[in-house]
Structure formats: C-alpha cells, structure tokens
Length: 420
Image (cartoon, rainbow, N blue to C red):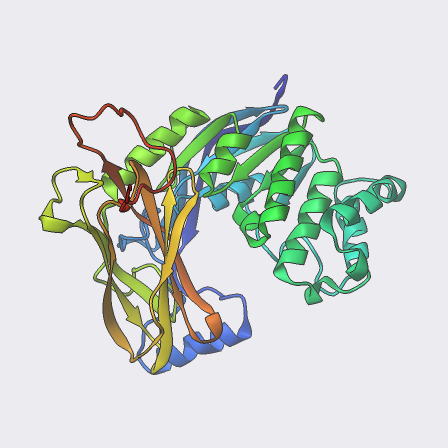
C-alpha cells in the first residue's frame, strides 16, 4: 500500500428491513402498541435504494453501493452530501463498528473515531477511567496514556468533572472529552462525523485547529464529515461528494463542492412526499412539502435579487394540542447562516398543517442558498430538524451599472439614504 493508509474496494452495505429492535424497551413497547391499534410502525425504515423520498418494494435497502477510493498518510479528506447519502454508514464501516456486505477495506494504522454522541465511552465510568479505557483499546500502555492525560483534560475543559461518570455530562462536555481523547491518543487515522455540531463555536474552532495540526504537523490522516462548507473548505484539500449511497464526485475540494452545490440547487427547489410512511421526520412530526416559490410564478426563469420569494411548507403533526413554532435557517453555499427566523408559537391539533415564510425582494445577495427547517415544541424542545431541505440561487440582472460582480456581505438590502 506504500503511503496509502486506507484502501476501499467495491464496498456495498445492505440492510434488511422489517421488525428489528429499536434499541430501547420503551420504543419496542411503543411499536407493539401501535401494531395492536392498527397504526403504522413509528420506527419504520424504508427504501429500496438509499433515497428517503422513495418507498421501495423490496425488503432490503442498499445504504452504500460500489464505493472505491484511497486515502494517503497525512491526507485530510472531507465527505459531503445530503442527509441519508450514506456518509455516516461509510464512516461506521471504516471504524469497524459495522461490516460491509460486499467488498474489502485495507487499513494501515490505528483508528480513533468520533461518530455520534454516546459512542466510545462507558456511561458508568468516570471521564478519567474512559480516557484510560480508550487508550488501552488503541493499544497504548498506561504510561503513554498518563503522558497525554493532562493535555486531554485541558483541551476538553472538564477538569472539575473528570472523576464524575460521563453519563452525567452534558452533550457538549461529552463531545469535548471524546474529541480530546480521539485527537490526543495518537491514532494514525482520525475519523470525525458531524458530531462536532453539538459543541459551542469556540470549541468547534479549537477542534478544527487540532485536526489541522494532527495532519500537517504530525502526519496523521483525518476523515471529516460535515454540512459546514466553510469548515470543509478550510480544512480539507480533497473531498468526496456522496449521493444516494454512491460516490458522485471525488477530487479537489472546491471542484467537488461546486458539483455538490450545483446538484443541490438544480434538483431541490421542492421537496415533496405525500405518503407519511416515507416522509422525512419521526413519530412527532413529518414533512410533506417544502418548496421555494418565486413571486409571479417565475419558476422557470432565474430568481433575481428583486424577486420576493415564498418558502411554503406542509407537515404532519402527530401530537394533539401541542404548542409548535417553526424556525427557518437560511445558509450560504459555505454553510454560513444568513439569518434565522421563527414563527409565533401556536397550539396545533393532530393532522396536516401548512405555512409560508416570505423573503422580501432586495434583501439577499447574489449566491446559492439552502434552507433548514426546525420544528420546535414546548419548552424549546426540537421535535425534528429538517436539515438541508431545499436550495436555490439568486442572481442579479442589472444593466447599465458600473459595478460588476457580487457585492460584499451576506445580504444587500435596499435602504433609504437621505442627503442634505
């Protein structure tokens, strides 16, 4: 393999659909109760290919199909794609938490992975004990782990709670310690999923800096999954774009990102699913439709900065008389939040509900944007976050101006000036 540390050949992963354990007794009992009442399985998983908008006729689903790539020592490889594209499944296979149905993987070196909150640590053990446990799993001696212990605790900022069972940690504390362990115990390969989104902005910056250091200064290999295009662009020289369980593009990050954003924008002015069984969501709320509609029904033409835009949505609510509000996030192509707006909280009955949010003309700058929609229940509890749902491009069609190119800034509102 020479300097190749990861070689993936013809990897495919198939799952069988049907009645499998949900992971907890409460969920299993809930499933049984739904079945007795003749209701749909609230934990149903469906799909013949890895496309959540399509209900398949088969009892099997291919989460990954024919994945091939190589990663060299010291590379920092980003992986991007919409939710359900197969990114996390691929990382789980590389981390050996699940095995491929077809194909082979050759790995040279120890792997430390940070895939999701709750993995890698024993909840009953203290932070201190979990550090030593993870080091032992990586094959390190107790003395080697001791030499890194203070650095890990300082990085994670959990010194006061280091002898407390990690089950009592907040999700942010848990992720900080888990990342500190994974990054400082000197694995040859570091695999990080979107889990860093749990941490605060300061820690995310710190973690991204550490990932860059372990690659450039220590020669270790990093694989990083994120919806944050800015982080991917700044950290990863090369990138993989995954779509429906397959690699759509692989190469230099900027080129791959352009293909991803072009694909996302051209195909996603509308997301629609009239079958609640296959619609995205959970047992509390599911999204039927979210659609970008330019004013004057100018769907076939370009959306200009002078065009008002309506974001229409429909969703099924499964909880009777619950106070719900919707929070809409608008992001640039680089994953930077332009704004976040929320609806007033309203008591809603069970059933289908509709809404619309208008983005006025003369507000957005030229560029490509994506929308995420969060449904928030009582106590500011997120019922479901529909990430990266639809995308659209805004262009300028001005003539007779001396200014050419995009204006600086995220927005370019038309404001009134008074000169005297």
